[in-house]
Amino acid sequence: MVAPPRPAPAANRRTWIGAGTLLALAAAWYLATTATGLVSPARFPSPADVFDAGWQIATAGYAGGRLAMQVWSSTRLVLLGFAVAVATGVPLGLLMGWSRRAEAFLNPAFLLVRPIPPLAWIPLAIVWFGLGDAAKVFVIWFAAFVPALINSYTGVRTLDPTLLAAARVHGASPRRLLLDVVVPGALPMIFTGLRLSLQASWTTLVAAELVGAFFGLGRVLMTASRDIYPGMIAVAMVWVGVMGAAMTRGLGLVEAAALPWRR
Amino acid sequence: MTRAERAALTGAGLAAFFGAWMLAVAAGWTSPQFLPSPREVGATFVQLLGEPFAGSTLPAHLASSLGRFALGFGLAAAVGVPLGLGMGWFRWLDDVVTPVFEPLRFVAPLAWVPFAALWFGTGIGGPILVIFSGAFPPCVINAHRGAALVERRLVEAAQTLGASGLRVIGHVLLPGALPSIVAGLRISAGLAWQSLVGAELIVVSSGVGYVLVQGQSNLAPAVVMSAMAAVGLVGVAIDVALRAAERRVRRRWSPA
Image 1 (cartoon, each protein chain N blue to C red):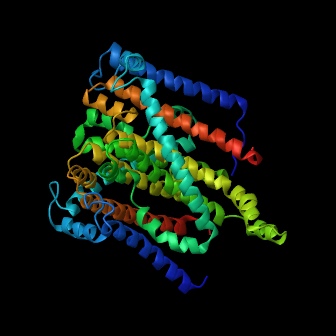
Image 2 (cartoon, rainbow over the protein chains, first blue to last red):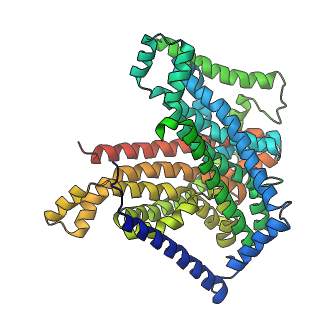
């Protein structure tokens, strides 16, 4: 069901109420932490604390490096793990969707491993690979692999059989069938899977870095937590959110470019 | 493909999975410090059921995890569902909450761990905040969607027939939104369980997540893998229970 478009004044009203809410929250934050001292700065940072912490990590660095380096360290690992997961999960999902034999053969192992949440792999990854990059990439791979595979599989299985039959009747070779019909047809579902994969990658990486890492935003969070430095905790959380949003948006742009017929 | 062929392929798949695992162990490609054999993991699992590890037996750890899970998930549902419904019914509430809610959704649940520890300690309160932050968004989103899906016509019809405000909510709005709410609760429970394991890896001293970490620091992969199996089994059990609830609700409420 599609909601009727809201008239312009309502949309305007929405923006105003939204801005008003955020302003009111900011004012309440300032009042509670700074003007009245109702909330102790050891528990909740004041706006000035957050600004100082942000300035400190951007210029002098914190927990082993400057902000740009920490953000890049986390982002690089997520992109690496995500790329490996896409490169393995999507083809495997397409294969399992295409061939019932492949599905019957591969599904049992997948069903055994799938219920284990990615975060539960972190300790095993540390035993196997230590605290370095390899353990992170392994855990991200697992987190992102599952949704990539499932959605690619569903994408093939939900293809319109008429399309496949039509392509066959017109003499399409299996190769053409795969490249011109199956993959483009499954692409919207594949992208749904990739969105979930990317989200899972980011969540999992933050967790893995909290458990143990040398660099990255999770490491900043953990160090700030040990130092009882609420301003820095808030800065790291904001950056976790910003990078999560930026990656989602980036993937959205890729999707729009890859599915031009949907625009 | 015949049914027999399918069964044979499924059996072959299982055999290949465990076969590759056992071969890797038997051929000595990895040391048992890194990859124990399936039999060893099974034996450790059985042993953990009876003998205490990291303070208590595996069932006792699971019970303390489930307690945290129930509290965090219950709190998320108790706050999230009414909030989502309210946002669906009252435009002003939606306008006020959405600009705060949307950006917060992008913060990974585990990133709340430091503040959770600072505000509520590492005992029971801290992990619950983390579980809550994982489980809350699907509750809100699905309740919101469910409320928005209730047909205006039905509400107007009930009002025309003289139903009071409370009766409209109880007999029209809530039943209409229920299937979507229950679907949201299932997603939410999965995320809650996963966030719980993450929180327990970091801040607490009991629960399955703690067993995972202790197994890791003792370099006992058989313990880690047993705990992973336990996490998976409980996760499946929770999902099966909620799936059954979802089916019941659908059968009862969906328009015939």
